Image 1 (cartoon, rainbow, N blue to C red):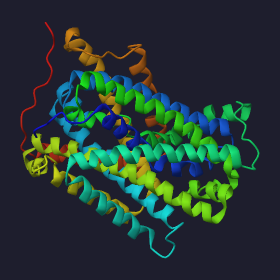
Image 2 (image 1 turned 180 degrees about the vertical axis):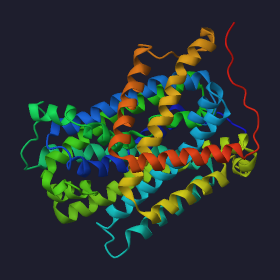
Image 3 (image 1 turned 60 degrees about the vertical axis):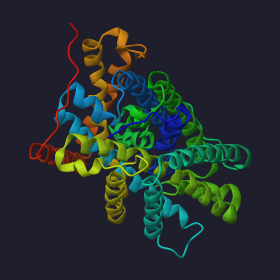
Image 4 (image 1 turned 45 degrees about the vertical axis):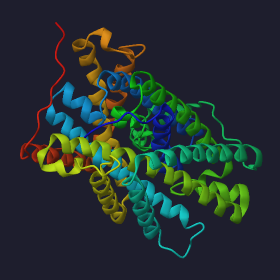
Length: 439
């Protein structure tokens, strides 16, 4: 796949922000309230999630500038561990990193759209949005990049409006963020805090998005770290403010167990007509997120087509250099998941698979430090080795409790990996040159 470095730091950062700000932050609070009563506990979920994403971004910035090609984890793991690990990373990214999140976002769009399109089935709305985004991103990269920048600016503006409106208009009691004994028990007393991080990590999915188009970013040594770190820090702040705004806007018992928490909060703040307008606004932000993943995900699938002969059709480009068949393939998988419509199960599956894949990638920074000479690095992870160790320890904790408390999801996740291994073994492959030890 031929790469031209035509994406600016603003496009890369917009991609990170838009990939992260999606259905997760607009849907997960209702499910978290089923396990936690304390606002402090819930906000701590988002703080810990932000720290995980930030530590991952710090390491990925080093990996991406040391190995600056498209593909994200697939590129990293192929060169650090071997072809089968890279293929499995691409396999997981295609399904759990992009197709499944796109499906979840489109499902959320369908649910929110019922606030202003009550006579249309949500699943039909979800399908229509996916088809339109597929057409857009299978056409021309300059158009899709410009759309991504504008949509991301609108996304941030809408969140800012919701936060300000909640602080100015809410008549609800102010949620306490004092760490009481009950709150500390909710965090440390069981594995529920770790398992609920699946929801939060899903919401933070996308902190590594710019690495998937690393081969197309101008001056990646400078711009990749800025995009990854700047985007992650901004989104962490927005998530904390938005979740607190939701808790401030509406009673917890009305939000509990609900997907469309933004609509419920808006109904309390602005009334029925205002809630309808806010539903439209939230749908716009969700379209931005689905657009970002439809934009970046096929780059991974196309890299798989370069390395696996059986999938070589996926690397085919149109006249504008877009891997359009990879775009169609990802959207077809997303469409299947939309029609299965298993919201929480898909979230948990995404959390399990991506925790495993990103952990293996972050561990690769130790290999990079050993095998690549210092003068090839334009960026180094600060506070090394504590940052990667923190990321790996937290993810190991999450996976442990995920296996313990959600064994069926973990079983299906393992099955996805095993199917990928079998497919790889039966496929003809190109050669991938791993990085060598420095003598």
